Image 1: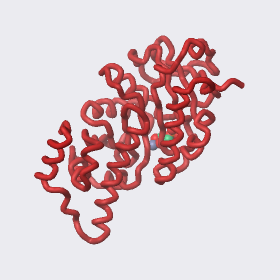
Image 2: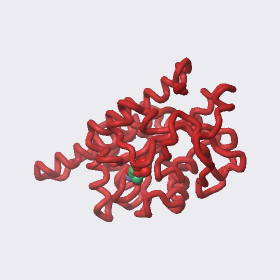
Image 3: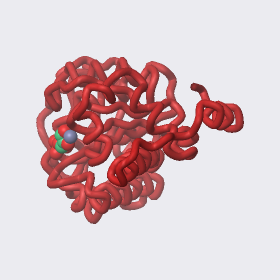
Length: 269
Ligand code: 13P
Ligand code: ZN
């Protein structure tokens, strides 16, 4: 068997980043069983030989027509595959797909016919949106961070920017490294087209969005950066919960301190 990562160091580098992040997700306790998924737009690494690879299986519908994905290729975590297994064997627990010419479906081209994540409609709709905006972002990550999800079990943190402002105020790094904050999406059926549409509309204003009582969806230039944004947000949630556990409501940084941060780091909000 020929492996697609063989003699393609740049592509292998991107897939290795997926494996590294998958390991972190498992170590953090954010990836129970098959929880979470990752897709990466790898089109820039695809050569003519890869473009000629025959499909391993029949074409499958995405559930939406996504015109900006014409000619695109993605690494996708496999549905029902475990992050702890992706960490060791990314190509046995995920696959590379090619978007079909009608932009409404995909075929798997390597290495094995591993069916992509059930959240593919959200991931691909987001990639379609990112391309339409000329964004340099190539990776999308969905994961189940414990403390951030816990915060969505009360209505007050579901109000616009309440969680964002609280999380930013827990430690200066959170605003510096997640400068657009956390968007909130009311509960929707996992894997649904409605979830995909709601995710896109929030990504106009945020790089990380919370799917109420489910998990976060983050985008960035690569999967490591997307992970870092979720990591700093969840660190803040842990600090908040630790203070509450010690019996007090944390003060948070003052409005002046937050403003000083935004000016010093030239932050957008
Ligand atoms: P998949 O195993 O299909 O990627 O689903 C995991 C998940 O977290 C669904 O929201
Ligand atoms: Zn999930």
